[in-house]
Length: 296
Ligand code: R5P
Image (cartoon, rainbow, N blue to C red; front, top):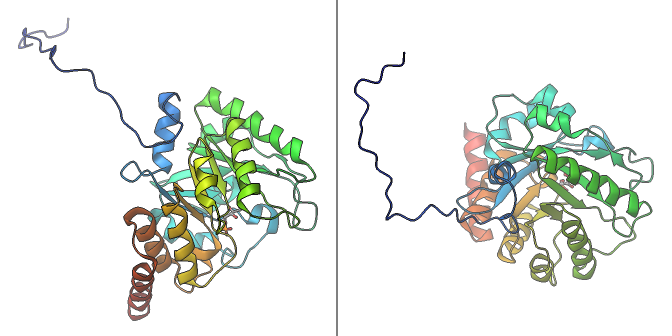
């Protein structure tokens, strides 16, 4: 028989204290289930509502990208500095420690290599594998205006349905073909379609004019994609402009892992995203952290 001796008989129900309300800063998430909100909070830092994601999924269509020749050597040491990692299940299982505490967004679409038509993608992993890996979201490319537009939408909605079953959010990525202009009109169209069709997060490129309208018109968090390698100050300025325009952070790859000092760049990007650091101050941080690395 259970030992009941010593149990306090008085009970404190705090009848005058209203039930807790959870205020959260994740746009469009208040009607999602607990598990999905919990996973979103592992990607978007609850203190700032923003994320610094480290993207290194490029190999899924372009093989050993410069800076990603050895993910265990180049990327693994940076993993803990990121709020979330964005990668393929192959690179994760082979090269990233299962002890990592970072959030995890798994690339879940693929098919063609750089040698073929890039929009010719299919869903490239099953949701139950994302569950097994303990992913916080899955990512899928959506080619609005592209040759295989409808199929890429179908890839996404299939994952959204499976994601609701598993409690795993979907990150829809606006994939801009060479022939499409990365302006606010196009990005606004693509991000809105992705959110309307069920993605809980959207990733898109930055545009100089009207990015705040792109973000305002999208009912879920918009995360800025990094794009090609820029000089560090330019990349920090772009990240700063994006978050000031309302983006919920950045998902950067080449501007971090192709930097001369990736860890220093990560620190500077974090300052811009989480502390609203001025880009010039963040660049100074980058220079100081790079020098520390050289002296160490
Ligand atoms: C597209 O979604 C790619 O797979 C990358 O994740 C994305 O482009 C971010 O990497 P980068 O900052 O190098 O463009």
